[in-house]
Amino acid sequence: MSLERLKSKLKNDNISLSNTFGVITKITATTIQITGLRPSIGDIVRIVAKDKSKSEIGMVTQIKTGEAYVSPFGFVEGFKIGDFVYGSDQGMNIPVGKALLGRVVDPFMRPIDGKGALDMSEFAPIMKSPIDAMKRGLINEPFSVGIKSIDGLLTCGKGQKLGIFAGSGVGKSTLMGMIVKNTQAPIKVVALIGERGREVPEFIEKNLGGDLSGTVIVVATSDDSSLMRKYGAFCAMSVAEYFKEQGNDVLFIMDSVTRFAMAQREIGLSLGEPPTSKGYPPSSLTLLPQLMERAGKEEGKGSITAFFTVLVEGDDMSDPIADQSRSILDGHIVLSRELTDFGIYPPINIQNSASRVMGDVITKEHRQNAMKFKRLYSLLKENEVLLRIGAYQRGSDKELDLAISKKEYMENFLKQDSDEAFEFEKTQEILAQINS
Image 1: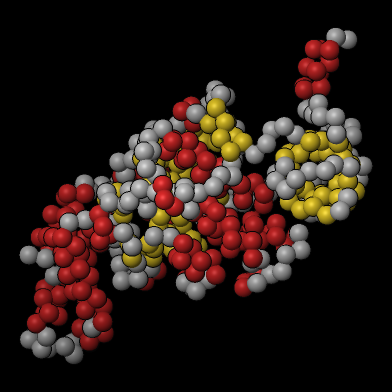
Image 2: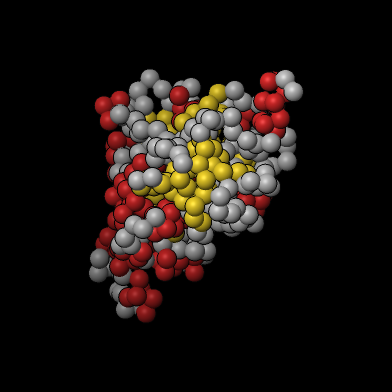
């Protein structure tokens, strides 16, 4: 048999041509212990059963003297003690290219939408340092998302990082769909991490109307391994960075940070990390800025404006992941279950929400109108009980009287159908009319 035919056969059998290999000495539900290799942390290896019935890619996550621990991207079922582990030259890189636009892929950029293979020749690292602090561009341009309550009262800037905080079933997916559909950004990258599998086609058909033009959807569902869910988020960010490097303004949306942190919790605890608040090991909290800080605006290049959804269990905003996320992000949008009971969608609680760069991207007139709106709306909320029982007498407070007269207009401003979109200038006009 010729050397080329031998290489071809080995390649087809998914066997590495590496001259070094190790063997499995112990297997747990999430980790494989190996000896015989001298890998580095983060190295990619290929695990191959002796009978070639199963092959899986894994990552070296812990090293001890004479042994290493590998977390597989798939599952450990089918592997046995004595199976081989080969060093891989794949590295932590994924293929990227314009062919991704309009497609639904897994974290390794393998298509899962049944539309055929992807032709890409460029590669991007999964893990990358965030933008250097002194190379970040100033956030001084508004980023319109076509939603009145956000554009008018919580204005985003191009290159900003925001969190969408909500309990389950409050309307995160609907709001995400509205942002993706209504934004003017030419490139949109959506990362669906750790969510239910049925939500993927539902999100595409119901929330996006089946339109994936200019959009890349990266999916790692809840039934994927913890390593796949963890690195699915980083892979999606690498895709956004690829388009940013070409000078594009990119919208990045990830659902959800909580599932991402839970994936790292599974990995950390399996490797013996001590659990802290709510069982999260320290690595879960240190991982968040590694991902979130990669978004932003870079001088001479494009920008990544990011929205990260955070699931707050029991609507508890003191959850460790929610608390840590708020400290890293440039603003937070809080969805209220109470507003859904009153039929206000999207149910954005403007009193508890904030955009830290809003003052840098809007005009003086817009800022004054937004502040006046928030003041009048807060007065209504503070005196809601008095108004409902009829204990307030008109004329007692001129400002509250003004707020009562504009109550219907303000509530209508906060409401918006999922298929509606408002231009940024139109939103400013409506806000000015309410305050006139």
